[in-house]
Image (cartoon, rainbow, N blue to C red; front, side):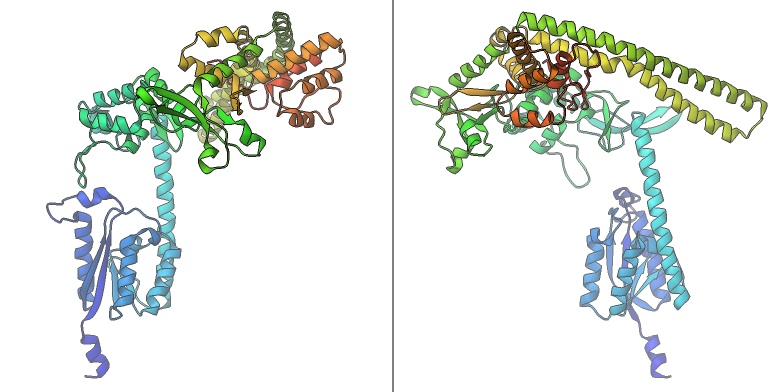
Length: 597
């Protein structure tokens, strides 16, 4: 025998790469093989291929439950490549099928180049491509088709999952407090979720405790652990107390109110809610008060937290929030202060301001918020006039949409007749009917929202005018929770100086209302008659910090007849500047959200 023939008789070396893409596949028939039936089947087929190649299996790499589309996200495959770099005597890498190793042709090409340098050949146990140029071409085509199939499958799954979510089905593992169950629907068993009788009451208790405002997430974690709230046991982890991070996520999850969340969209769910909407909203209010406004989640709450900023830092060109602290003095007396955050870094020397001083100063800001009765009456009259003027335009638009609706209905009727008489292919008629149905729904939606677009803006202004009738009295009589809501309704923030004095910055829509009132007063005092003068009066009386921006908004618009800003200030001011016109726009580009608490 020749040396070449002797070499061919020598056993070669091979390594196996076995992989499944989901954890569930590793749990099938585990009484037969600890890695599951799929891995066991791959192993048997790959061993037969190794025998056919006269190769001894020297190592086995098993990657269970990793659904990664690139090899970069597969740690076991990367370990296989590292092993080959260290053991240069390996001849083959055997896989069950190329789709088990690669989900895209780029990874396949990169891996092939890497293996070629090591003089290692990748062999598929199920796919016999042979050898040579045509075999390599077939491998490449197979890799491309595997990628296409993988992408199509992924897209198909996403469409089905979204459709399930739209129809109220749960598309993920059951949340804490629920269980994944099987239901009998008309003789068919379907996957669904139901209440976990052990944990659901404890989930409600967690929401109730946090809604009181007396529990931080850390304290709630300890309390719920004492009450017995635990995670569900899995194959890898035993039951254990619910962590603070999981509690935080749970308290924000709309699933507990009966909704399904998929890809950032929220849909009404078919599962039973664990908590009511009112309780859920109370929890969100507490979370927003502690973190949404820039405050930490701690028990030391104050209704002004998150809205107080340092005036001294503002003058220095910095933005620095005021921190609320409680300190225990002699005799266990508690003292409450606000101090500048920049003081901790040595950048500001604003002194500690007692809380009661700031509270009194904030209350004083409400003195200037009360509307003049004559201005309020005049504003309501002009508001009514504008709405009545817009109704004329609305009726014209409504008539046009109604005509469109009739035309669509006539077309649908004709198509249905053609469908009955078999005058055209049914597929084409049904496609056209679907198109007309979509058009009709759009027209109906526009008709339904037409009046609301105008009325909403008028309603917000009317509610704001009502709220501003006597705000100081309402503020002093309110609870701390209501005071916070009032402050967030009227103001964007407060700035505190060295003496504890407070300068407030109004928020929409009240900055517009009070600016319009100042313009109204100026017009009456100086008997201003032109729109241009009225605009200038409005700008000159605007609060500090808005002069430059508002002046720029009016550049190139000297007649004041068509304001381009969506701000309520100019929507209301435009009502005053257009004495002979009812075309002032009430709904700005950004729309309205009711500002009243």
